[in-house]
Each structure stands twice: as C-alpha cells, then as structure tokens.
Picture 1: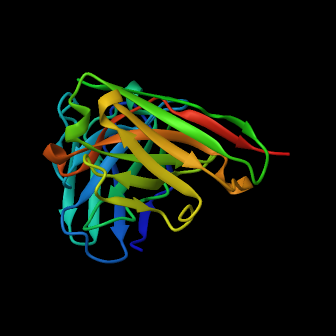
Picture 2: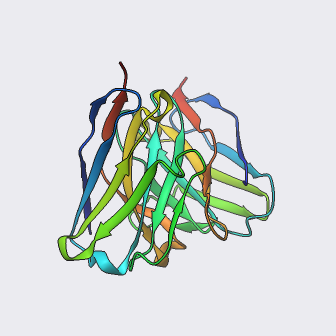
Length: 108
Length: 120
C-alpha cells in the first residue's frame, strides 16, 4: 500500500499568515493527490484535486502543487475559518486509497 | 449539488453485525462510483470500500475484507455497507462519499457520517 506522510502534524499560526503543509508519498502517485479540510464534528470537504486544481467554490487563497511523491498545500493568507485539520489523500491507480495522518492548524 | 445521508449506526457488541445505509439525492446516483471512509475517535481518515456505478467493481480495505460487504440499489438511490464480525477497532464515524470523475476521482460530496460503537 502507498503510505502518505504529512508534515507538520500540527502548527500554530496567526490570521494573515502564509501556511504550507507538505505531503509525501511512499511511491509515485503522479498527480493523483487530493486535499481535504475537516472541522470538528463535520465531514471532510474537498479543497484541491489532481494536486493543483481548485474545487469549485473554494477560495483562491488555497493552492496545491507537486507531482510524483512530494506535494504542498498552501494557504496564502490564513482566515479565521481556516483553522481546521487538513488531510492529503492519494487515489492513484486502484485501491486501497490512503490518507495522510492529518495536519491540525491552530490559532497562535 | 448533491447530498448524501447516512443511517444505521449504533452500539453493537464485538462479533455482532450492523448494516449502514447511505441515501443519495440531487444527482444521478447510478452514474457515480461511491466509497465508504471511516474515522475512529480522535484519529485520521481511513478508506474502507469502493463500488462502481454498476456494482461490477468492488474493492475493500484489507482491514475489513471478508467481514464487510458493500452493495447498492440504484433504483432506490441507496448504498449499503453490511458489517459482520465487528471488532473494537471498527468503532468509528462512517462516511459515504461520492467519487467524481470530473475531479480526478476525488471524494467531492460527503455525508454527515453515522457513528458505530463496538462495545460489550
């Protein structure tokens, strides 16, 4: 199975900060990498698909990049509603599709 | 914009069974593959099972293979997860999610989740 490793596991940031989360795959997943945001008690929400495509309705301050094994989610200027946990997920080829362990973005 | 609504969760003893349902609305259900994803309390997300629109292709995570059975009824716009021989480690919130080809087969719509508790 393809293992996904996110870093950091958590971070503290202030409103207006630029935030970067990285995700590394144990083998190449091409661009089959998605990012989700989850708030406490809620279902995950798709932010980015195919490594860098912004899901409809998601603010443009969110962006994704990377291919192969190394990927990045960037929030250009953190808003109060962005404090949440973020997960990467690979859906390369056939299942099992795997998620990273999550990165919790907290208020500094 | 579609919606998904799970039901069927609850408390079950180890070794017991439970059947989860997911009702879809607002989109042509038969045209979409679907998955179940679970989240144990305080833990991350784990993909559980996938079914194609026609039910011709089904996949399971190794952790549930042989114990869980995924099916769908396109006439009823519904997805089902039959869970047998439940273990402590199956306790989680179970989400159904739509696989969207237009977004590179990502999970673009999620239900609110249904909680499964396994305890004696």
